[in-house]
Length: 58
Image 1: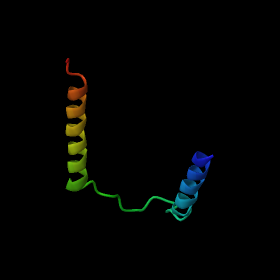
Image 2: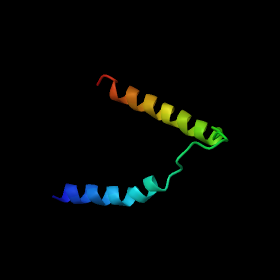
Image 3: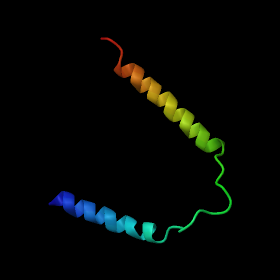
């Protein structure tokens, strides 16, 4: 029952964001700047590190 209540709260909290979102794509594209590329690189490094840690023989 708690899961249903939590799910309903999350849906109701995010519903206004979905309803007031832009209906069409803007004319100017959004640039992928250095900050986003740094986050992608950090995620890739973290993923490789976690993969290697998980797959090392004991």
